[in-house]
Length: 138
Ligand code: CMP
Image 1 (cartoon, helix red, strand yellow):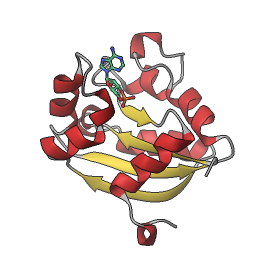
Image 2 (cartoon, protein in one colour; image 1 turned 90 degrees about the horizontal axis):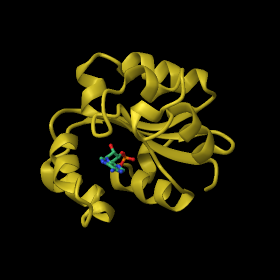
Image 3 (cartoon, protein in one colour; image 1 turned 90 degrees about the vertical axis):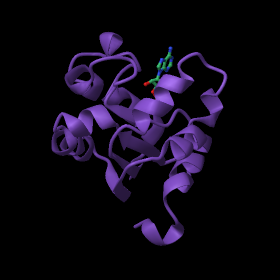
Image 4 (cartoon, rainbow, N blue to C red; image 1 turned 45 degrees about the vertical axis):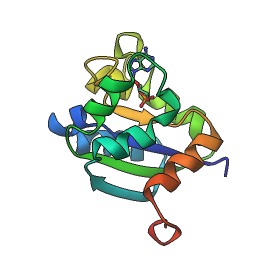
């Protein structure tokens, strides 16, 4: 499914009141919402989601941050979704994120970087399926 990506609005952006503004940027960016939920990950679930980063130095921080408060998880649809969404959110480190991107506007640090965006079609598929069943996609 080359026209879909997966995103999370992370605990920092939720806590700072940016859910509405970020969803507005996403929709104005031409993305259709296929699935969406507001939930808090347990540390176990966050660890499972980020298992691919298990050996990285930032894994512990990442898991504890991502389970620290509620998030918004969503599957998004648009032509060229992976690449276009990564352009819309900007670089992983907000210090490097281009002017006007979501991370440039709403993120504070590389950990508290406001949003997640899948890096490949394969990961978008895996990540979306972590949260949503077929009956929760429209
Ligand atoms: P995300 O793409 O959601 O998934 C992995 C997260 O780890 C990434 O966003 C960052 O928030 C966080 N992170 C912390 N340190 C690093 C790093 N050095 N390189 C990449 N990601 C990092």
